Length: 309
Image 1 (cartoon, rainbow, N blue to C red):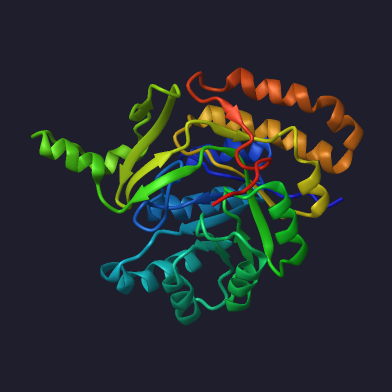
Image 2: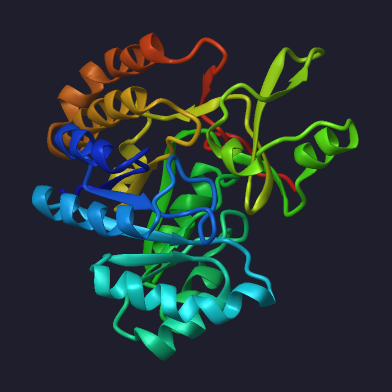
């Protein structure tokens, strides 16, 4: 049976070694100027080094260019895409059509993965971008299992689904927290907030803490829980979902590595020994629960909810 790719977000170049040894098939890296909500910042030197390290381990590297671009950045996209192509990345992850158009002009051989995070909600749209040149569609996190299965059945492109980690609930291009601090007469170094793990919106009524950070792309408010469906992989494996993503944003590298190893075991068993997977899957879930940060409860996201807008 076909195994889905295990895609993970490393925190830095050295972390790629550990993730590869833990069983990752691919990593997604980038810098905040062009990509959204990554676990670590990879400038050009780190990007090139990441490709070299990945090649040592036989895993793939995807470059994140899924930011929303305004006019002032358009002129620099071509030069950055040429750099990525020369570095040997395996694919560019994009959401803005400006990236697709520029790739056609300067690196038409480059593989593209379409990822808007919110609008990949039906197979027609996935196939639309596929016919424009994308080889993969990254599905919205708000879809339930039935919708995912229907999209996969009709998709002409590869399908990627997030199976673990937090999700973005809100993004504004504005520096909301930075502006608030400035209003108070305080200074905040916005560029460092991407790695700040101590900022939360606290909902006392529900007892929820929503992680928040700021970077060059604005303000991001994340879900209070982490998705975890390590014990519910059967249907997607049987349907041939092409890639399972572990999103490590705002998590420590050691946690991401351990979760990767546990999912590696789950995927291998689910695809190769279903009876053993059924016997072990609750133990695998318990292993993740044992290392889960206390303020980050696990849930199954929207996978088993009726999708209502």
